[in-house]
Amino acid sequence: MKKFIFSVIFIMLALPMFSQHMEIEGYDLPNNSIEFLRDNYNSYSKYGTPMFYVEYDDNRNGRVDEFEVHFANGTVIEFDRDGKLKSIDCGNNDIVPLSIIPSNIKNALRRYTRNFNIVEYSIDRGRLTIDYEIELNNGIEYKFNKNGKLKE
Image 1 (cartoon, helix red, strand yellow):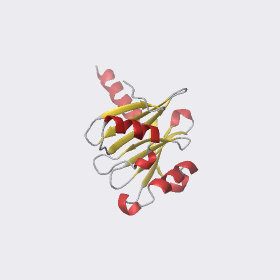
Image 2 (cartoon, rainbow, N blue to C red):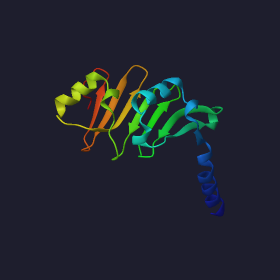
Image 3 (cartoon, one colour):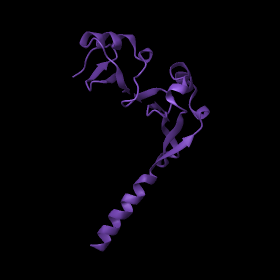
Image 4 (cartoon, one colour):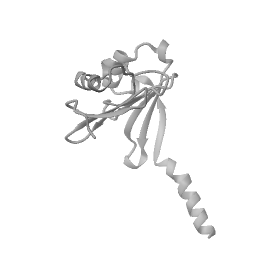
C-alpha cells in the first residue's frame, strides 16, 4: 500500500514537468502575432501592460505549442506556434473587437441575435475545416463553419 501511495504522489508531482509555461518578452512572439496585437490591442492604457507567455512541451525537444498574452484586465489571447490566432477570452471585463470577426460570421450572428457582445472567440483549425466558436455576454454559444453556417 505504501508503494502505491508513493507512486501516485510521484506521478502527480512529475506531471507538471511535461508541459511548462515560461514568461517571454513581447518581441519573442511570431511577427503575425505582433501585428495582430498592434492592429487590435494597441491601446494598452485600456487593457493594462500585457504579460507574454509561451507554453512548450519538453517531450518534443522544447518545441513551442502556443503563445499566450495576458492583459491586466483579464483578457487572454492565445496564438498557435506559428502565430495564428487561436482564441480570445475576455471574461466579464471586456468584449472582443468586431473587427477581428470575419464578416460572414458577423452576418450570421446578426441573423440569430440583434444586439451582441462577444466575450469569447476561438478558431479551431482542422486539417480540412475551420470552425469558429463564439460566446456572447448573455451566455449563448454559437459554432459556425468557415462559410458562416451554424453547426450543431
